[in-house]
Image (cartoon, rainbow, N blue to C red; front, top):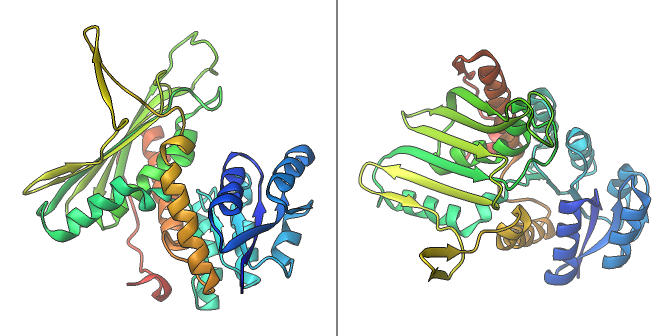
Length: 340
């Protein structure tokens, strides 16, 4: 195959980012079809990458010119299109979350397991971020000693919607940090608790009951703990910082720009405006790795099982935040397809 034919389902921000990475940065693949219910958006993205417009997403998956699929449609459609891609025997890169419920995510796992090979890669791109990957390398080298704790700080400049409930923060934003905790510690979550901080009465531009901050505590198998903070309204920019606290040393991912300036009694360093800017290198590495694996008929990186476990932990956190209590996770057997 000279170039991998890729179909993109969803032409919003992430669909457009992935389409342009393939069209402009990855010579071994080309975008051949773009689908989105918004005709103007679909047309604009398709024309910008030289692809065909397709109104029905399922027609993208069944198109013989499409050998692999990127799913960047609304969250509630992810599981359906991932399962359709598996049934069509086509590798897919599915943006997070894998599904909006743990049951739907489990259905993806079961469909993939029935086929006997991995075809679903979930868009937890932090595995491809240099800082996060370097932390895992340090952990595996033994330089940090035994992992005692993981800290994750996730900061957004402003609410992405006026009604940012704790449930939405957990399932749509903190779900990245949930996967990072499993990735950085190297073990599963056994119990969770969470609390949120509301905006308060009369806050401008947000709905009643919206929250501005969620903090979670994840108890991990083996004894480590993961502490996750998500601030949805920092007012100053986008940041993600991860830290592993070990018995022998502590390591943290670098943040900010390469240059710090001291001026007029202050130290100034650039902060990213949004997540596509902050993780631009990670997205390129992620999509490049996915294309390379898809050319061989498979996928790499975060699996459907990872997506399912993130959904399961997110559901437990939503319950814990609402009740103010501690919620235990079930002990599950990892299907053979995802072991090792």
